[in-house]
Length: 171
Image (tube, rainbow, N blue to C red; front, side, top):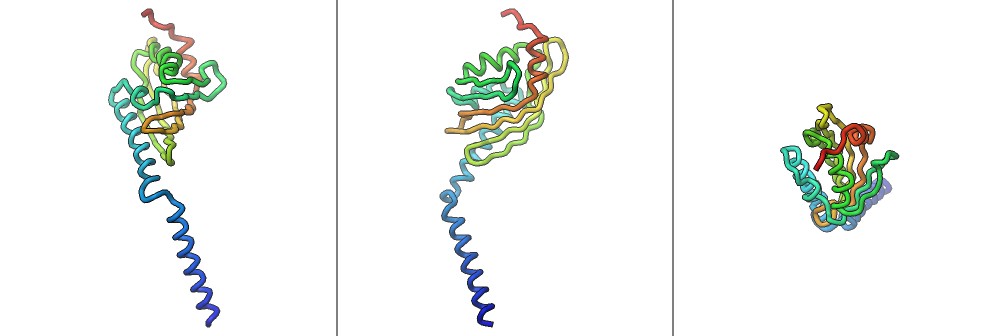
């Protein structure tokens, strides 16, 4: 009987120590979840404004010195250093070939500390009247309430098709 009581006591002590060590190795009260929740809210709000017709998504969300990586093997893949470079070389050449801008239609966000992952569907219409649809996954490293690094995954075939098929409008 004493052995059973000793084992039960040992398990209780182990459970208390495990719980205490988990609490003391975690971030200070509310900090980790607060940063994580704040980051998720910032990205959610930016997507909500964009879906509602807003046009300042990238300016609102990206650090001036963001590093944006588009993964893939097409000519559109690559790394863009700086928000203005990314907008000039990747966003505007594509957006100028559309008659209606891409809007997020379904967004799922996941947050883990300083990272927010946005998985979203986007739809728009090209200048020739044909629809554009794509699925995106963006992994964003947030710093000071803005995305400092973004790794973007999307099907580059429809994106590249717009760039090939539709000439840039005269400016």
